[in-house]
Each structure stands twice: as structure tokens, then as C-alpha cells.
Image 1 (cartoon, rainbow, N blue to C red):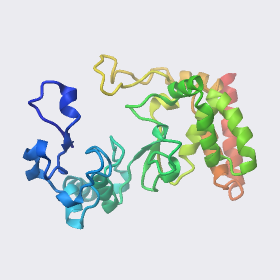
Image 2 (image 1 turned 30 degrees about the vertical axis):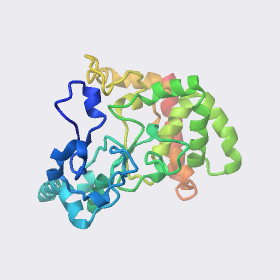
Image 3 (image 1 turned 120 degrees about the horizontal axis):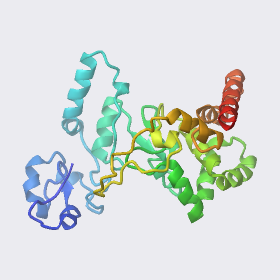
Length: 295
């Protein structure tokens, strides 16, 4: 948790110099937090800001267990009910601070990988699909992010759609000689770019895919604007006639075509040679769904 002083009247001024509750063993401006510290002073990287993922450099096994005490109780309860812990999803609201990473690894749990947040200039960025782990949950966005359809409009307006397509080409187009032309076509077509973004989720290695309803249904409205107080936040709902809306948008290539995404991902992994029958069936289903929607 990120904590800050309650005696500072301005909220922003209070939040910025805050600290992580269990990682403030000797901070001069937060001496009250020392008694809660799990981390030792020598385990901090003071060249980094306190909110940085690597503010805590390392932890020993006992410290990892202390950090994960509550999660361990949840997992024990789940196992007691015969649940598979792989069904437990852990939403990481920031990137991934060291203590969280260590606790999840200790229990074999995955994290959320929101691909729209990926830094395409950083090969090690945690939101890039290729950096996910099999236990992770990967998604285009969630309740706190803009729908991918909203983003594609922005990418095209800002001139960054080509960079998105170039990256996706490395994930989806096996033949390097074909990537440039594919990226040019995809960047120019908002629907194609979204379909490629969706296919990227299924390439792996993440073993769990989550699609937020706004992305699936081709909606551009925002579900929530984090940090903004608004009566519109958390009020968006799946339309009552969602099936009709989905079919209509699918016919215009303005909703995610799941069979197309799956077929594209299988080809990207070279599995069309292993299961040509499956890829052919997905192709037919994708085309039929789009044609029926258009008709």
C-alpha cells in the first residue's frame, strides 16, 4: 500500500512524497512507518523514487512469506474448497513492485498484462505480450483503461498506428519479408489494427485471456476515468440488445472477431501446419460471422 500523511491539507502534496507501508524502515519524513517495515534499510535502492518497482532490491524467503501472509490465507481457503489456485486472478494496479512479484512467484500465480499500456520502445516492458508468463492474465484493457477502439482512433490521429502495427507484425507475421507490407495495411485500417491487437493476446505465452466487454463489443465509451470524480464512472453497462449491436459492428469490422483472432494467432505460432483443419474451420467461422453480420 502507498500511504501518506493525513496532516497535509492538500491531497496532491500529501500523496507525492508518500511511501510504501512495508518498505519505509528509516525514512526521515515517515518515521512512524518504521514499525511496520518488512524491508531492511540495506535492501532499498535509494537512487530510485519510492514508488519505483525496484525501490526494494531484494527480499529473503521469510520476508516474502510476511508480505504474502494474507494471500496465503486466501489460497489456503481456496484449496480447502477444492479450488484450483490458477483460477485466482491478481490485478496489479501499478506495474509490479518487487515484493508483489516475489509473492506471486512464490505461489505460482500470474498477474494482469494490459497490452495497450506496453512501451513499444522497451523490449523488457512488462506489458508486452512476449514478456508474459504462462500463469498470467493478458488483456487489451480493463475497467480502468480506454477501450481499444477509442485508442486506435487516437493512434491514427497521432500518427502512432504504424508503430503499433510494426510491433504486432513481429508477433503475428512469421515471414519477416512480409511484415512491412502487412504493417502498412494494418496501420491504415482501424478495424484490422484492433483485430491484430486481439490476435496478439492468443499468441502466448500467457495462458489466460480476458476481454473487457467494451473491447469485444466495439464500444468507445469509457467505463471509468481513474482519479476523476464523475457520475458517469462505473455506470456503463452492456447494452440490452448487445447481440444485435455486436453482429452489426462485426459486419463493419468494428467489433472483435474471435475466430479471426484465434486463426491469426495459430498461424503466428506455426500451428496451421500442425492443425490445418482447425485453422480452416476458424477461418470459415470468421468469414461466415462477418458475412452474416454484414448481410
